[in-house]
Image 1 (cartoon, rainbow, N blue to C red):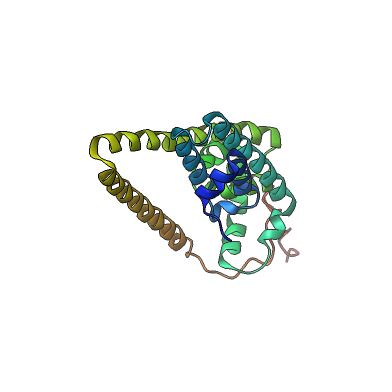
Image 2: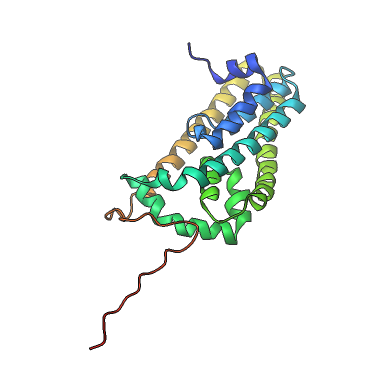
Length: 231
């Protein structure tokens, strides 16, 4: 028996939100069930007095921090092994691993804090950070900053949606409120589908042969000693 997300939140409450937020970045489940959607929905239910707001906010923040920390450790432990093998995505990741590692070292505000607020990017960010040379205390400091922005965004959107729903229902009636809400959801789904499609097509460049050696993202690969004997 499969349960829908609203059913899970209604039955298990903030505990379900904590697990979803942790699993999103620890085990990359955010590609299937984004925790941002669950957080916004839980905030909406809190605005309707179905769930308590404070535990919702706390569960989302704790789950996100826990999942990011687990993802950081898993990336450092198993990240290079995960990049081995064939496939376009793996080749693309191997090719860009040293560049991503430098980004974490030089611009953690963008690579960690800002990336934490972007859908899909935040799902893979902790793993990539664990494969880089950034230390965990520094990662955690920038990650908590990003979690604060992420939580404020999705909790605010969900809570304000509930308040707006009540206002629209009171002014326009429930029927027109449903119509406007449906149009908004369809528009959001179309924009999301377009962004996913654009991301998948942009990764089709450069279909060269896979590198025979996986570069170590913690530093540039040392070049071989070249040059033959002088004539």
